Image (cartoon, rainbow, N blue to C red; front, side, top):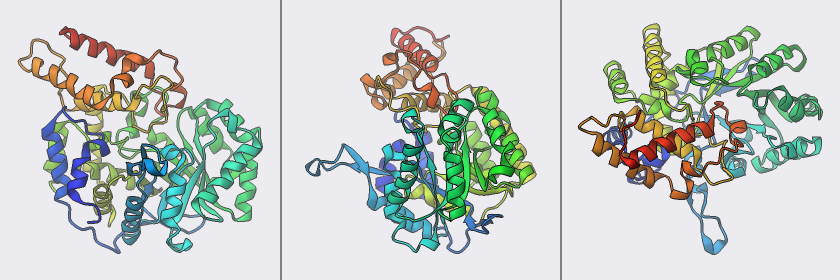
Amino acid sequence: MDMNRRQFLGTLAAGTAAVAGCTSKKEEELKDEYTSQIEPPKGKMTYRTNPTTKDKVSILGYGMMRLPYRKGDKEKGEPDEVINQEQVNKLVDYAMAHGVNYYDTSPAYCQGHSEESTGIALSRYKRSDYFVATKLSNFSPETWSREKSIEMYHNSMKYLQVDYIDYYLLHAIGMGGMESLNGRYIDNGILDYLVEERKAGRIRNLGFSYHGDIKVFDYLLSQHDKYHWDFVQIEMNYLDWNFADEMSSSNTDAVYLYGELVKRGIPAVIMEPLLGGRLANLPRFLVEKMKERNAKGSVASWAFRYAGTPEGVLTVLSGMTYMEHLVDNLLTYCPLKPIDKEEDEFLQYVARQIVNMQTVPCTNCKYCMPCPYGVNIPAIFVHYNKCKNEGTLPMDATSADYSRLRRQYLISFDRNIEKLRQPQHCIGCGECMSHCPQGIRIPEQLQKIDKFINELKKGQEIS
């Protein structure tokens, strides 16, 4: 194993959104899943064929959004944290050796450094050995001009060290509705420009990733005869299949999204198969039910098998920060064992239980960051969700465990979120909401959690 296990286990809480102090037993169980890993076989990766280009694409795609970091070298003028390029190279080497050939990045990932890091890692291989996907992430109106958007497109090639891009996406269409789509891609002529770039061979496949307003998704698909979408990236997992609209008013069930793509023969690239790690950190009673059915498989493997099962799926993206994450996914996809009918029914039962828990539908994507007032929005939601999933929220003041859980929650909250980054500093400006792919009413949720914490500090019963 390329990464020292002790090093991994020491940082597991940060890497998997585990929260110290909420529940030590669950974390120990999660560590056991990784320490019991075996070496995944080589030459067994499952591949899907792109109907347009005939690319043989690995069913596991590497999402370069959550790369490992190291402390910056102040003597070299580095910031406090920088991407650990040595570790990225090791992860990519291991992935390539086991058949992973699809790597997805964006100018917006890792504070703008993901493309450069990805380019460094992949440039050590023959260009024909991998497919690289990146995006026109012109979210800010300052980048909506034709000149700025084209500049971003060319910078992607420069940072990735390539002269063509295999899979290029309009990034997160739907956020901001039709007004944003028109401003970012239509009125400035950029979409027509990208179509011409595809004709010239500098883009091999042109598609888009979808979050938000379903009208935008439907509109772009209605234009398929004009643009000939080669692929579309959607959020799909066993929770979002039927319950996305119950978890968030701005999301659409994946059964509809996937079905519309199948109708048109457009391959689907899957993002958020774990919902930002939420489907790897399930309540204990659900984990036990999974282990009854498959004692050796990890909790995460259920979600990855589900996402990879439909035949119209080209690849499933996973942001694998640590070697143990990569190994676990390789064990799932080398080769893929599709979900059968009974397992599908079981996962829909699991999904319903998750919906009933009413957690905050945050995937820890960090699109809401940075907050202009310093609030660590995703960390607050991750901490709250994990404790709620584990049944360690101190809700009932009459419970024998209330005092212990109350103290445990408050201590773990302060350990995981700095005082100046806690929810009381939210002024409700709402700037974060326009960037949230899940459509979360972020200020409202922060206010609820802040009220909850204040009631705990007063020793009051939580209603």
